[in-house]
Length: 327
Image (tube, one colour):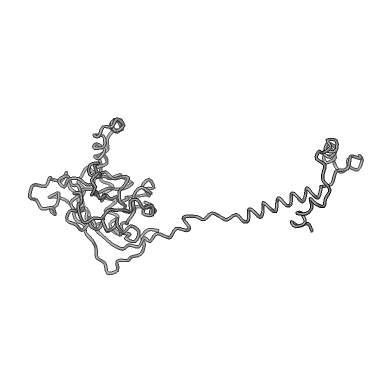
């Protein structure tokens, strides 16, 4: 039997082959190969040259080499397969109570306590309980908890943006008399997770996902340029479907455990929608560098009724480590 080892020594044993083939022989070979078996019996064409063992050896040798190379090539490892699974165990739970005013909230007067409601005749919508993923993004979770517990946190601040069928946004920083969050000066730590690629691996795959706003942040530039700036603006996806446009741009750090019906009720509130011509003029003004264009866009998608966080805090549970809520 012919083997790879014997093919290696064939060039030294077989006689050298001619450098040029005879054109007449080639033509007769082609003609004879195209004839039928009956014509082969009646004619006497030039005998077809038998395959040269040296050429067959070369073909077999090359096939074996290619086959061995293909087998020996390693399969590139998959980064997703080698990456450790994300631990979405819920380590903390907080609550947000949402209320609504039939009209715009009243401006707080001088000497008014900070814990007084923004609206005297407000109506409680309900409570939303959020589970936080403290093992994945502990800094983001710690800062969010501090804003829910602290006296100058999310309490008595507005839901300032609603995109129907997508998400709602709260926690915009600014002035207290406008229903915005007072920029926190203490109690928070610098969030280094905003530059960690692992913090962006969870996706906005379903309704009720809680994430820290980075791409959707509406804080004014002078607030962001403060050396002690802390981003506390957050969003909650409202459904009915996922929001893939938010993936990789915002940090998912929790999900809704209870009160998804309240989230859907907030998402159905009417909002301000500018006309198409106003949007075009705003885009032109922004292209020309007019700062008023950005200020005007902060009013887009605002609810026409004042929906705000009337109370918030942490829920103490006997067993804080719960089952994962995201795959």
